Length: 428
Image 1 (spheres, rainbow, N blue to C red):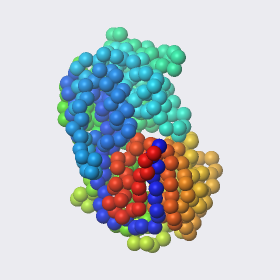
Image 2: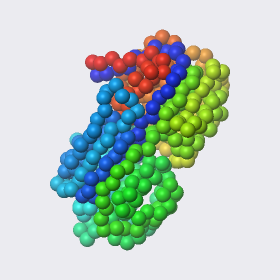
Image 3: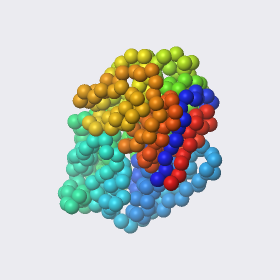
């Protein structure tokens, strides 16, 4: 099993190309189920989750071809052609869906196009229960009959889905994706209220419009969809990954240095930029991305609550906590999205951090130094928080179970090495 070794203490200088957003690429791939035409996606990141979803979609009969890139090229996303001319299987089996939660989202498109779906209840990172009740509520509102048997959701809409008024009791990215993808082929009008407004949902909605969907209110909390009878293929480029952008910004904040994050979209990162600036990190918006700079001055502590977009993203919480372990004072970080997303705390403690948990809140007391140690990744974002801490720790940090990293960060060690970090992947 691969490990990543980091020898800390190097400042980061140079540029890092930001890859396509995993959280947009996955639902965009699933959108291909809605049309017999060919969906061509560019700037698709090369990630383990993308490869797994390819297998799941191919199981349904989607023909997928990928125009790859040389291994030495970073920041140049793949071009993927997906053609779902014939859907041969409407079952998404446990052995695939249990490995990645986002694959559950095939439920809506399969129902909309085929009138039936059998999808395993999901798996993914162990960061909370993340129930699918709102997904199923949305499908029932659209006229589907739902049953759960032997760990599978059995859904049918033999007469087709019908437009409906869907109101979510809390903001959910997954449920918004599910309702949107189902509603575009439903008969009549659908209104989705309290919808998630993350940039990745907007990216999916804009792709659907290119395919012939009729959607109003994109990038807002109220989506209005007028159902159409069919969609066609199109070409679409995946947006830049705002979580990867925030992660590398915090790497620079932790180590000091000067790095241009090429292709980053500042409009998707307002809350992250605000927190970085309050912590004493200089962030400048450039024509070709974001420039992150810290000259060695002490990091200032911050108070942050994670929130749905446009608030501070839960997917950057672990990274921020790692950066604050060496701030000059005490930071307060409250996690409001997932109830079990502090598993990185005990691993950061192995490096010498001083973090105290009080329910959904972490009190991070800054220390003068961190010291390298062997640590273990527990989930995708927790694993990269250990990278951030290791970049500043004295001595050597060895991160085990880095397959979590490979799920969401493309060629991470190559990008950091190019900016002067002493980072290496050790195979076996």
